[in-house]
Image (tube, rainbow over all chains, first blue to last red):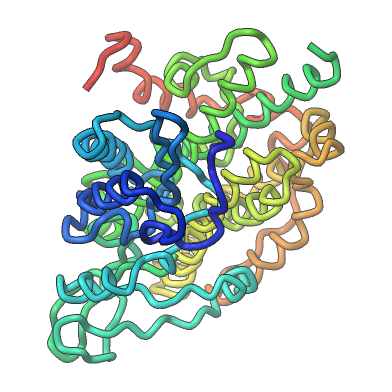
Length: 187
Length: 265
């Protein structure tokens, strides 16, 4: 963080900026669109909102990324794949810079990717209302989210465990079709 | 270098070790449950909490090494700090290093810490040190989830069977004397609080007490009576004075890099 290259990172950045994006910048964004999260290999890191900025300084490229969870083991792999993809596209190995602030949120996941998650049997996250999250009392009065079963569409589902196959998911089961499924936690 | 900045950095280094060591040591404790959690889902959940903490530990210790470099001319990497310090150089809370015990003991330790951790990180998001504020903003989102989970378990076991209730009550009783250290502000912290960098944990105590009591009540558990607090007088884990449990933990955690320095995957 704090490289001085980062532009405004406060808004979701899910694709090339239309104004002033040079053809090579567009090519870099396209290349980044081919890099997938190894844990959910049908969703690209651009769709996930991990790529925060692409900047060019003379011959150097700086790609700013943000981790989903601080301990996510995919982060290192993703950085390596970004270097490869950009190298293959514009012939330069980019600098990959990590920005922690503002912290990643599932609200940055592109609508198209939410549909892909659902189609793959993973219930997509609902919107995070940041102000509600701040105000939530730190005790046991939280309302459980109503999660829709990705298999049969029923809302009669129950949480089995607070974590699922990865840190970003919880484990649920449908009370109608009885199938267990992962729920991508709103974060 | 300017003397004042140097005095701040020396204390900031120590403070970052406190933050990082809490996360690192608790992660190691949770890792001890791998493959033998009470149920598979909990095995996975507790180690995922550990994974979040490991990520946070890396961010704090990396920054600690950078602060050490700018104040002393030479700084250690996150791995050097994790694997090549002795127990008296660790700065984690005494609560964190207590053994896993039965699952009620593990849940109680996690619950008492999470309720404090979430308040601490919330304060640190307002730190005048941008890097501290950024790491805290990232971590607090993860810890909000941790505190929900450990509170759920406290209620489930406390308001469960006679056996689970008795074990949960005794776990809370046994660990209570380590909670005073969380709110004890020493000279290092006072200096950094005045500089707008550290969180004033003393001011957090009423909030912690109120949240903890609410959950204890829902869990049908009794809040322990006031008692003597271990390490609260500036002679605890934050000053490098630990229980013997930490040395055993570090032996397991550090054996590989010490036996094979510079080993790589």
